[in-house]
View 1 (cartoon, rainbow, N blue to C red):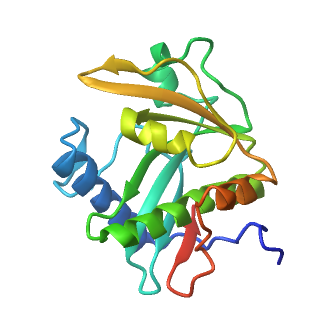
View 2: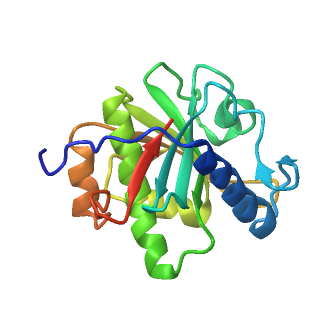
Length: 205
């Protein structure tokens, strides 16, 4: 395997999916106070968590959730088209090879140094999944601080419009181009690949 070849992912066990939804509730509802649905008081699950949603998860060797993200098809209803289209100066990017990255979640139990390692592993996991599935671009919505970080990751990325205050928070939308060169661009910018660490496992479903 070459240095920047995509790393294969394993199918997601049901227990890990449940842990992901619990982690999402802890981060987005308990910490960030988002007004989003919670199932059984434990799981953050919304209308986009249907059979078309895909998940990329980073876990440890014991199967514990460390970080995760959700991918939505852009030819179907998704967050940018359904609720945040005003963030785009032009049309919302849509197509069979474009996915929206949502619910980028790092487990709250992680220490600061661990958060960086897991964040980088999850970013590379998303790119690996895109290369394996012939996905050529991601879109994303982010609060201003995270928006600026994403732009600085080294990949080919551009804002879709000016950040705008919506619902009391300044948000921006981005488009990220994905190609064979993307892993190397990330590495060059300091987003180190850690997916081959013996302590981390990638899952996708």
